[in-house]
Length: 133
Image (cartoon, rainbow, N blue to C red; front, top):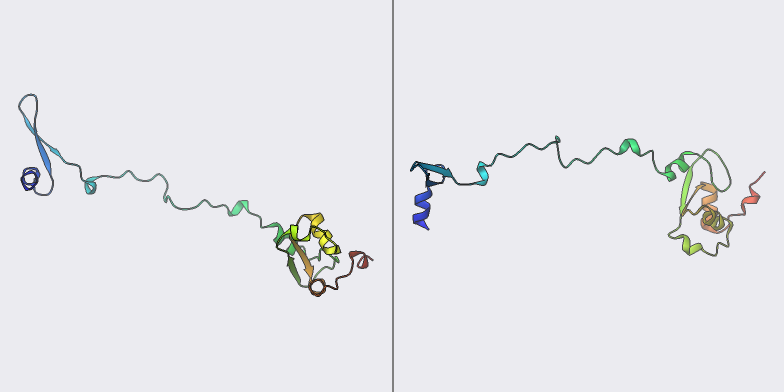
């Protein structure tokens, strides 16, 4: 192995001597990774994710929160909270009016005013018809 390394060594690089058809001796430089010239990447940076912000206008839940209206009693203005259930399948019977509303809308969330949300969690939320004036 030492003899081969000595035979190939040309100082700063390694090369093989080859004799051509006309008896002319030429050196063929051996391949090394550090000598490779890489082609520049086409984009300025390869790993940047595309800018998808212009295509997102916010989620439906954010739009419902920005409406500033309780989805149960219809009260406008004030503070609102979101009531969330884990699965709609947990409410498949839908005995309570608020459960029936969520099942009809096929949503796991309801945007409620603070009063309605506290009543719902306490179990004293009246029927929606009570709020209609």
